[in-house]
Amino acid sequence: MVGLLENIELFGQNIPWLEALREEGRNIFTLPGAKTEAWKYTKLHDLRCDDFVYSPSKFIEELEGVYEDNEDCGCSDCDQSEHSCGCGGSCCCGNHLNLYVDIPFEAHQIHFNNGKFVPLYPALPLGVEVMTLMQAIVEGEARNYVGKYIELKKYPFAALNTAYLEEGVFISIERNVKLAKPIMIVYHTSTKHNLVSHIHNIIVAENNSSAVVVEYYKHTGADKDRYFNNIVNEFYLSPKAEVKHYKFQEEAYKSVHIALNHAVVKDGAKYKSFCLQKGANLARNETKVELLQENANAEVNAAYIMNGWATIDTTTDIAHLSEKTTSSQLVKGVVGGEARGVFQGKIAISKNAQETEGFQQHRALLLSDTAEIDVKPELEIYADNVKCSHGAACGELDKEQLFYMRSRGIGEEEAKQILIDAYLTDVIDKIDDEDIKEWIRANV
Image (cartoon, rainbow, N blue to C red; front, side, top):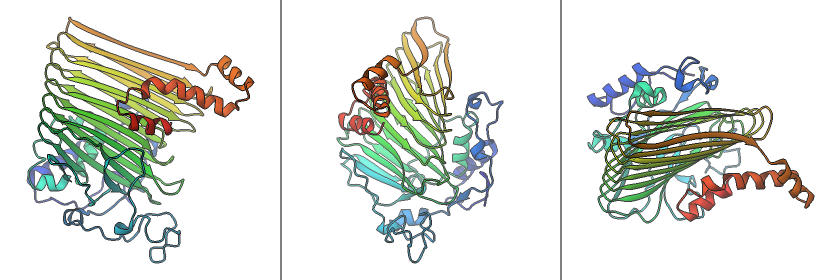
Protein backbone atom coordinates (compact mmCIF):
# COMPACT_ATOMS: atom_id res chain seq x y z
CA MET A 1 0.00 0.00 0.00
CA VAL A 2 1.44 3.35 -1.00
CA GLY A 3 0.73 7.06 -1.10
CA LEU A 4 0.77 9.20 -4.23
CA LEU A 5 4.57 9.48 -4.20
CA GLU A 6 6.40 6.17 -4.05
CA ASN A 7 9.70 4.89 -5.40
CA ILE A 8 8.81 2.41 -8.12
CA GLU A 9 10.92 1.16 -10.99
CA LEU A 10 10.14 2.71 -14.37
CA PHE A 11 11.61 1.97 -17.77
CA GLY A 12 14.17 4.48 -19.07
CA GLN A 13 16.10 5.17 -15.88
CA ASN A 14 19.25 5.20 -18.00
CA ILE A 15 17.99 8.14 -20.11
CA PRO A 16 19.39 11.22 -18.35
CA TRP A 17 16.99 13.85 -19.66
CA LEU A 18 13.97 11.64 -18.93
CA GLU A 19 15.10 10.91 -15.38
CA ALA A 20 15.78 14.63 -14.84
CA LEU A 21 12.24 15.42 -16.02
CA ARG A 22 10.77 12.78 -13.72
CA GLU A 23 12.77 14.11 -10.79
CA GLU A 24 11.54 17.64 -11.52
CA GLY A 25 7.98 16.35 -11.32
CA ARG A 26 8.65 14.60 -8.01
CA ASN A 27 10.22 17.70 -6.50
CA ILE A 28 7.40 19.99 -7.61
CA PHE A 29 4.38 17.86 -6.71
CA THR A 30 2.46 18.69 -3.61
CA LEU A 31 -1.20 18.02 -3.02
CA PRO A 32 -3.11 21.33 -3.39
CA GLY A 33 -4.83 22.56 -0.26
CA ALA A 34 -7.53 25.06 0.67
CA LYS A 35 -5.12 27.96 0.19
CA THR A 36 -4.23 26.96 -3.37
CA GLU A 37 -6.24 29.45 -5.43
CA ALA A 38 -6.69 27.23 -8.49
CA TRP A 39 -8.10 24.42 -6.33
CA LYS A 40 -10.01 26.29 -3.62
CA TYR A 41 -13.43 25.08 -4.87
CA THR A 42 -12.34 21.49 -5.48
CA LYS A 43 -11.55 19.60 -2.31
CA LEU A 44 -9.17 16.68 -2.67
CA HIS A 45 -10.25 14.59 0.31
CA ASP A 46 -10.39 11.42 -1.80
CA LEU A 47 -6.64 11.71 -2.45
CA ARG A 48 -5.61 12.12 1.18
CA CYS A 49 -5.22 8.42 1.88
CA ASP A 50 -2.34 5.97 1.86
CA ASP A 51 -3.73 2.87 0.18
CA PHE A 52 -2.93 3.71 -3.45
CA VAL A 53 -1.52 0.92 -5.60
CA TYR A 54 0.84 1.26 -8.57
CA SER A 55 1.12 -1.43 -11.23
CA PRO A 56 4.58 -2.57 -12.32
CA SER A 57 6.09 -1.39 -15.58
CA LYS A 58 4.96 -3.21 -18.73
CA PHE A 59 6.86 -1.22 -21.32
CA ILE A 60 8.88 -4.18 -22.63
CA GLU A 61 5.69 -6.18 -23.23
CA GLU A 62 4.14 -3.16 -24.95
CA LEU A 63 7.19 -2.65 -27.14
CA GLU A 64 7.31 -6.30 -28.18
CA GLY A 65 3.57 -6.51 -28.72
CA VAL A 66 3.15 -9.05 -25.94
CA TYR A 67 0.38 -8.67 -23.40
CA GLU A 68 0.40 -11.56 -20.96
CA ASP A 69 -2.14 -12.26 -18.27
CA ASN A 70 -1.76 -10.20 -15.13
CA GLU A 71 -1.28 -11.97 -11.82
CA ASP A 72 -4.51 -10.27 -10.81
CA CYS A 73 -6.87 -9.49 -13.65
CA GLY A 74 -8.36 -6.63 -11.62
CA CYS A 75 -11.93 -7.86 -11.95
CA SER A 76 -13.71 -7.55 -8.62
CA ASP A 77 -14.15 -10.89 -6.81
CA CYS A 78 -12.34 -12.74 -9.57
CA ASP A 79 -10.38 -15.85 -8.61
CA GLN A 80 -7.17 -15.73 -10.68
CA SER A 81 -7.17 -19.38 -11.67
CA GLU A 82 -10.86 -20.19 -11.88
CA HIS A 83 -12.25 -16.76 -12.84
CA SER A 84 -15.16 -17.41 -10.53
CA CYS A 85 -16.57 -13.96 -11.27
CA GLY A 86 -18.02 -15.43 -14.46
CA CYS A 87 -15.83 -13.49 -16.86
CA GLY A 88 -14.78 -16.70 -18.61
CA GLY A 89 -11.11 -15.74 -18.39
CA SER A 90 -11.61 -12.72 -20.61
CA CYS A 91 -12.33 -9.84 -18.24
CA CYS A 92 -9.04 -8.01 -17.87
CA CYS A 93 -6.57 -10.71 -18.73
CA GLY A 94 -4.65 -9.72 -21.81
CA ASN A 95 -4.99 -11.52 -25.09
CA HIS A 96 -8.50 -12.82 -24.41
CA LEU A 97 -9.89 -9.45 -23.41
CA ASN A 98 -12.49 -8.17 -25.84
CA LEU A 99 -11.58 -4.49 -25.85
CA TYR A 100 -13.51 -3.36 -28.89
CA VAL A 101 -16.15 -0.77 -28.02
CA ASP A 102 -19.39 -0.85 -29.97
CA ILE A 103 -20.02 2.75 -30.99
CA PRO A 104 -22.26 4.24 -33.70
CA PHE A 105 -19.34 5.54 -35.78
CA GLU A 106 -16.21 4.09 -37.32
CA ALA A 107 -12.96 4.85 -35.53
CA HIS A 108 -9.36 3.70 -35.19
CA GLN A 109 -9.54 2.32 -31.63
CA ILE A 110 -6.59 2.40 -29.21
CA HIS A 111 -6.96 0.85 -25.77
CA PHE A 112 -5.64 1.18 -22.24
CA ASN A 113 -6.63 -1.40 -19.66
CA ASN A 114 -6.25 -0.50 -15.98
CA GLY A 115 -3.76 2.20 -16.92
CA LYS A 116 -1.64 0.05 -19.25
CA PHE A 117 -1.44 0.40 -23.02
CA VAL A 118 -2.66 -2.70 -24.86
CA PRO A 119 -0.45 -3.27 -27.93
CA LEU A 120 -3.24 -3.92 -30.41
CA TYR A 121 -2.68 -1.32 -33.11
CA PRO A 122 -5.39 -0.25 -35.57
CA ALA A 123 -4.72 -0.21 -39.30
CA LEU A 124 -3.92 3.45 -39.89
CA PRO A 125 -3.69 5.28 -43.22
CA LEU A 126 -0.37 6.39 -44.67
CA GLY A 127 0.97 9.45 -42.91
CA VAL A 128 -0.50 8.64 -39.48
CA GLU A 129 1.62 6.93 -36.84
CA VAL A 130 0.82 5.64 -33.36
CA MET A 131 3.46 4.33 -30.97
CA THR A 132 3.84 4.04 -27.22
CA LEU A 133 5.16 7.14 -25.50
CA MET A 134 8.23 5.28 -24.27
CA GLN A 135 9.01 4.00 -27.75
CA ALA A 136 8.76 7.59 -29.00
CA ILE A 137 11.12 8.67 -26.22
CA VAL A 138 13.63 5.90 -26.94
CA GLU A 139 13.57 6.65 -30.68
CA GLY A 140 13.86 10.41 -30.10
CA GLU A 141 10.44 11.28 -31.54
CA ALA A 142 9.03 12.72 -28.31
CA ARG A 143 11.91 14.68 -26.81
CA ASN A 144 11.01 17.95 -28.55
CA TYR A 145 7.42 17.73 -27.30
CA VAL A 146 7.01 16.03 -23.93
CA GLY A 147 6.42 18.69 -21.29
CA LYS A 148 7.96 21.41 -23.43
CA TYR A 149 5.26 24.01 -22.80
CA ILE A 150 3.66 22.81 -19.55
CA GLU A 151 4.67 24.82 -16.49
CA LEU A 152 4.69 22.06 -13.92
CA LYS A 153 4.64 24.48 -10.99
CA LYS A 154 1.16 25.60 -12.08
CA TYR A 155 -0.16 22.07 -12.57
CA PRO A 156 0.54 19.82 -9.57
CA PHE A 157 -1.06 16.73 -11.08
CA ALA A 158 0.81 17.19 -14.34
CA ALA A 159 3.94 17.25 -12.15
CA LEU A 160 2.82 13.99 -10.51
CA ASN A 161 2.11 12.55 -13.96
CA THR A 162 5.62 13.58 -15.04
CA ALA A 163 7.15 11.91 -11.99
CA TYR A 164 5.77 8.59 -13.29
CA LEU A 165 6.17 9.33 -16.99
CA GLU A 166 5.97 6.05 -18.86
CA GLU A 167 2.48 5.10 -20.05
CA GLY A 168 0.86 6.86 -22.99
CA VAL A 169 0.80 7.10 -26.75
CA PHE A 170 2.51 9.33 -29.29
CA ILE A 171 0.33 10.14 -32.31
CA SER A 172 1.63 12.03 -35.31
CA ILE A 173 -0.27 13.20 -38.38
CA GLU A 174 1.97 14.21 -41.26
CA ARG A 175 1.71 17.35 -43.37
CA ASN A 176 -1.45 17.61 -45.54
CA VAL A 177 -2.93 14.35 -44.20
CA LYS A 178 -6.69 14.54 -43.59
CA LEU A 179 -7.69 11.65 -41.36
CA ALA A 180 -11.09 10.34 -42.50
CA LYS A 181 -11.98 8.41 -39.32
CA PRO A 182 -11.44 9.49 -35.72
CA ILE A 183 -8.70 8.08 -33.54
CA MET A 184 -10.47 6.83 -30.42
CA ILE A 185 -8.57 6.22 -27.18
CA VAL A 186 -10.55 4.00 -24.82
CA TYR A 187 -9.54 3.77 -21.16
CA HIS A 188 -11.01 0.59 -19.61
CA THR A 189 -10.90 0.37 -15.83
CA SER A 190 -12.01 -2.55 -13.68
CA THR A 191 -10.16 -2.88 -10.38
CA LYS A 192 -10.98 -3.70 -6.79
CA HIS A 193 -7.82 -1.85 -5.69
CA ASN A 194 -7.24 1.87 -5.25
CA LEU A 195 -5.19 1.76 -8.45
CA VAL A 196 -3.31 4.85 -9.65
CA SER A 197 -2.73 5.34 -13.38
CA HIS A 198 -0.68 8.14 -14.92
CA ILE A 199 -1.11 8.34 -18.69
CA HIS A 200 0.59 10.94 -20.89
CA ASN A 201 -0.40 11.29 -24.55
CA ILE A 202 1.16 13.51 -27.20
CA ILE A 203 -0.67 14.39 -30.42
CA VAL A 204 1.27 16.19 -33.15
CA ALA A 205 -0.56 17.59 -36.19
CA GLU A 206 1.77 18.85 -38.89
CA ASN A 207 1.07 21.66 -41.39
CA ASN A 208 -2.38 21.60 -43.00
CA SER A 209 -3.32 18.24 -41.46
CA SER A 210 -6.58 17.41 -39.72
CA ALA A 211 -7.76 14.76 -37.29
CA VAL A 212 -10.48 13.94 -34.78
CA VAL A 213 -9.37 12.46 -31.45
CA VAL A 214 -12.01 10.90 -29.18
CA GLU A 215 -11.33 9.89 -25.56
CA TYR A 216 -13.69 7.51 -23.79
CA TYR A 217 -13.24 6.68 -20.10
CA LYS A 218 -15.19 3.47 -19.61
CA HIS A 219 -15.62 1.79 -16.24
CA THR A 220 -16.41 -1.91 -16.56
CA GLY A 221 -16.00 -3.14 -12.98
CA ALA A 222 -17.96 -3.22 -9.74
CA ASP A 223 -20.04 -0.23 -8.68
CA LYS A 224 -17.79 0.57 -5.71
CA ASP A 225 -14.45 0.41 -7.53
CA ARG A 226 -11.96 2.99 -6.27
CA TYR A 227 -9.15 4.22 -8.49
CA PHE A 228 -7.40 7.39 -9.66
CA ASN A 229 -6.84 8.20 -13.33
CA ASN A 230 -4.40 11.09 -13.83
CA ILE A 231 -4.19 12.08 -17.50
CA VAL A 232 -2.10 14.59 -19.46
CA ASN A 233 -2.75 15.23 -23.16
CA GLU A 234 -0.43 17.49 -25.15
CA PHE A 235 -1.58 18.75 -28.55
CA TYR A 236 0.83 20.45 -30.95
CA LEU A 237 -0.81 22.06 -33.97
CA SER A 238 1.43 23.34 -36.75
CA PRO A 239 0.25 26.12 -39.13
CA LYS A 240 -3.21 25.50 -40.63
CA ALA A 241 -3.65 22.18 -38.82
CA GLU A 242 -7.01 21.30 -37.27
CA VAL A 243 -7.66 18.94 -34.37
CA LYS A 244 -11.08 18.21 -32.92
CA HIS A 245 -10.87 16.67 -29.48
CA TYR A 246 -13.96 15.03 -27.99
CA LYS A 247 -14.06 13.44 -24.54
CA PHE A 248 -16.66 11.38 -22.68
CA GLN A 249 -15.91 10.61 -19.05
CA GLU A 250 -18.09 8.10 -17.20
CA GLU A 251 -15.76 6.76 -14.53
CA ALA A 252 -16.94 4.75 -11.48
CA TYR A 253 -18.84 6.83 -8.98
CA LYS A 254 -16.16 6.40 -6.27
CA SER A 255 -13.20 7.13 -8.52
CA VAL A 256 -11.02 10.20 -9.04
CA HIS A 257 -10.38 11.59 -12.51
CA ILE A 258 -8.01 14.50 -13.14
CA ALA A 259 -6.97 15.53 -16.64
CA LEU A 260 -4.95 18.34 -18.18
CA ASN A 261 -5.36 19.02 -21.90
CA HIS A 262 -2.62 21.36 -23.12
CA ALA A 263 -2.77 22.66 -26.69
CA VAL A 264 -0.21 24.76 -28.54
CA VAL A 265 -1.75 26.32 -31.64
CA LYS A 266 0.24 28.02 -34.38
CA ASP A 267 -0.56 30.23 -37.41
CA GLY A 268 -4.05 29.63 -38.77
CA ALA A 269 -4.48 26.36 -36.87
CA LYS A 270 -7.62 25.40 -34.93
CA TYR A 271 -8.10 23.36 -31.78
CA LYS A 272 -11.71 22.50 -31.01
CA SER A 273 -12.79 20.46 -28.00
CA PHE A 274 -15.89 19.17 -26.28
CA CYS A 275 -15.99 17.28 -22.99
CA LEU A 276 -18.94 15.52 -21.36
CA GLN A 277 -18.35 14.57 -17.72
CA LYS A 278 -20.86 12.50 -15.81
CA GLY A 279 -18.74 10.07 -13.80
CA ALA A 280 -16.35 9.95 -10.81
CA ASN A 281 -16.79 11.20 -7.27
CA LEU A 282 -14.12 13.81 -7.90
CA ALA A 283 -13.35 14.92 -11.45
CA ARG A 284 -11.49 17.83 -13.00
CA ASN A 285 -11.05 18.44 -16.71
CA GLU A 286 -8.64 21.31 -17.28
CA THR A 287 -7.84 22.81 -20.66
CA LYS A 288 -4.96 25.17 -21.34
CA VAL A 289 -4.63 26.58 -24.86
CA GLU A 290 -1.78 28.76 -26.08
CA LEU A 291 -2.63 30.64 -29.27
CA LEU A 292 0.93 31.29 -30.31
CA GLN A 293 0.65 32.83 -33.74
CA GLU A 294 -1.61 35.01 -35.87
CA ASN A 295 -5.09 33.67 -36.73
CA ALA A 296 -4.81 30.73 -34.33
CA ASN A 297 -8.23 29.67 -33.05
CA ALA A 298 -9.59 27.69 -30.10
CA GLU A 299 -13.11 26.55 -29.30
CA VAL A 300 -13.51 24.88 -25.91
CA ASN A 301 -16.96 23.56 -24.97
CA ALA A 302 -18.14 21.25 -22.21
CA ALA A 303 -21.12 19.81 -20.37
CA TYR A 304 -21.35 18.10 -17.01
CA ILE A 305 -24.14 16.14 -15.35
CA MET A 306 -23.91 15.10 -11.73
CA ASN A 307 -25.78 13.94 -8.66
CA GLY A 308 -25.10 12.43 -5.24
CA TRP A 309 -22.09 13.99 -3.51
CA ALA A 310 -19.82 14.29 -6.52
CA THR A 311 -17.63 17.25 -7.44
CA ILE A 312 -17.01 17.95 -11.12
CA ASP A 313 -14.63 20.76 -12.04
CA THR A 314 -14.24 22.30 -15.51
CA THR A 315 -11.29 24.69 -15.69
CA THR A 316 -10.12 26.54 -18.81
CA ASP A 317 -7.30 28.96 -19.56
CA ILE A 318 -7.03 30.42 -23.06
CA ALA A 319 -3.88 32.49 -23.66
CA HIS A 320 -3.96 34.86 -26.67
CA LEU A 321 -0.29 35.46 -27.39
CA SER A 322 -0.46 36.88 -30.91
CA GLU A 323 -2.68 39.23 -32.90
CA LYS A 324 -5.90 38.25 -34.67
CA THR A 325 -6.38 35.14 -32.53
CA THR A 326 -9.88 34.02 -31.57
CA SER A 327 -11.44 31.83 -28.92
CA SER A 328 -14.89 30.86 -27.67
CA GLN A 329 -16.13 28.80 -24.74
CA LEU A 330 -19.55 27.46 -23.79
CA VAL A 331 -19.91 25.30 -20.68
CA LYS A 332 -23.23 24.05 -19.29
CA GLY A 333 -23.88 21.98 -16.19
CA VAL A 334 -26.74 20.08 -14.57
CA VAL A 335 -26.28 19.54 -10.83
CA GLY A 336 -28.55 17.63 -8.45
CA GLY A 337 -28.45 15.99 -5.03
CA GLU A 338 -25.70 17.42 -2.84
CA ALA A 339 -23.23 17.61 -5.71
CA ARG A 340 -20.95 20.51 -6.52
CA GLY A 341 -20.14 21.88 -9.95
CA VAL A 342 -17.10 24.08 -10.44
CA PHE A 343 -16.27 26.27 -13.43
CA GLN A 344 -13.12 28.36 -13.61
CA GLY A 345 -12.61 30.03 -16.97
CA LYS A 346 -9.86 32.46 -17.93
CA ILE A 347 -9.12 34.45 -21.07
CA ALA A 348 -5.69 36.08 -21.02
CA ILE A 349 -4.71 38.54 -23.77
CA SER A 350 -1.12 39.68 -24.04
CA LYS A 351 -0.10 43.19 -25.11
CA ASN A 352 0.87 41.83 -28.54
CA ALA A 353 -2.53 40.27 -29.17
CA GLN A 354 -4.31 43.15 -30.90
CA GLU A 355 -7.49 42.50 -32.92
CA THR A 356 -8.22 39.50 -30.73
CA GLU A 357 -11.65 38.08 -29.91
CA GLY A 358 -12.42 35.96 -26.88
CA PHE A 359 -15.84 34.90 -25.59
CA GLN A 360 -16.85 32.77 -22.63
CA GLN A 361 -20.22 31.65 -21.23
CA HIS A 362 -21.12 29.32 -18.36
CA ARG A 363 -24.64 28.27 -17.42
CA ALA A 364 -25.86 25.79 -14.85
CA LEU A 365 -29.13 24.12 -13.95
CA LEU A 366 -29.73 23.27 -10.28
CA LEU A 367 -32.02 20.30 -9.65
CA SER A 368 -32.11 20.48 -5.84
CA ASP A 369 -31.82 22.98 -3.00
CA THR A 370 -28.64 21.29 -1.78
CA ALA A 371 -26.76 21.36 -5.10
CA GLU A 372 -23.97 23.91 -5.42
CA ILE A 373 -22.25 25.78 -8.23
CA ASP A 374 -18.98 27.71 -7.85
CA VAL A 375 -18.05 29.92 -10.79
CA LYS A 376 -14.93 32.01 -11.32
CA PRO A 377 -14.75 33.70 -14.75
CA GLU A 378 -11.68 35.83 -15.50
CA LEU A 379 -10.55 38.29 -18.16
CA GLU A 380 -6.93 39.43 -18.14
CA ILE A 381 -6.40 41.96 -20.93
CA TYR A 382 -3.23 43.87 -21.79
CA ALA A 383 -4.18 44.92 -25.35
CA ASP A 384 -6.59 47.72 -26.26
CA ASN A 385 -8.02 46.60 -29.62
CA VAL A 386 -9.94 43.51 -28.58
CA LYS A 387 -13.46 42.09 -28.30
CA CYS A 388 -13.98 40.05 -25.15
CA SER A 389 -16.85 39.04 -22.92
CA HIS A 390 -17.75 36.52 -20.28
CA GLY A 391 -20.98 35.60 -18.54
CA ALA A 392 -22.38 33.20 -15.98
CA ALA A 393 -25.92 32.25 -14.98
CA CYS A 394 -27.71 29.52 -13.07
CA GLY A 395 -31.35 28.59 -12.61
CA GLU A 396 -33.84 25.83 -11.95
CA LEU A 397 -36.10 23.68 -14.10
CA ASP A 398 -39.08 25.63 -15.38
CA LYS A 399 -41.98 24.56 -13.14
CA GLU A 400 -44.59 25.67 -15.64
CA GLN A 401 -43.05 23.56 -18.40
CA LEU A 402 -42.81 20.64 -15.99
CA PHE A 403 -46.45 21.04 -15.01
CA TYR A 404 -47.52 21.27 -18.66
CA MET A 405 -45.79 18.01 -19.60
CA ARG A 406 -47.11 16.20 -16.53
CA SER A 407 -50.63 17.38 -17.36
CA ARG A 408 -50.17 15.68 -20.74
CA GLY A 409 -49.44 12.34 -19.09
CA ILE A 410 -45.64 12.47 -19.04
CA GLY A 411 -44.10 11.14 -15.82
CA GLU A 412 -42.10 13.51 -13.62
CA GLU A 413 -38.68 11.92 -14.19
CA GLU A 414 -39.24 11.66 -17.94
CA ALA A 415 -40.38 15.29 -18.05
CA LYS A 416 -37.26 16.38 -16.16
CA GLN A 417 -35.06 14.45 -18.57
CA ILE A 418 -36.76 16.09 -21.57
CA LEU A 419 -36.05 19.53 -20.10
CA ILE A 420 -32.44 18.60 -19.29
CA ASP A 421 -31.91 17.31 -22.84
CA ALA A 422 -33.33 20.54 -24.25
CA TYR A 423 -31.16 22.60 -21.91
CA LEU A 424 -27.96 20.90 -23.12
CA THR A 425 -28.87 20.94 -26.82
CA ASP A 426 -26.98 24.09 -27.78
CA VAL A 427 -23.67 23.00 -26.26
CA ILE A 428 -23.89 19.45 -27.65
CA ASP A 429 -24.67 20.97 -31.06
CA LYS A 430 -21.18 22.49 -30.97
CA ILE A 431 -19.91 19.02 -31.95
CA ASP A 432 -19.36 19.08 -35.71
CA ASP A 433 -19.32 15.35 -36.34
CA GLU A 434 -22.92 14.14 -36.50
CA ASP A 435 -22.35 10.52 -35.46
CA ILE A 436 -20.22 11.54 -32.49
CA LYS A 437 -22.79 14.18 -31.57
CA GLU A 438 -25.57 11.60 -31.49
CA TRP A 439 -23.40 9.22 -29.42
CA ILE A 440 -22.81 11.96 -26.86
CA ARG A 441 -26.47 13.00 -26.91
CA ALA A 442 -27.57 9.40 -26.29
CA ASN A 443 -25.39 9.28 -23.17
CA VAL A 444 -26.63 12.47 -21.54
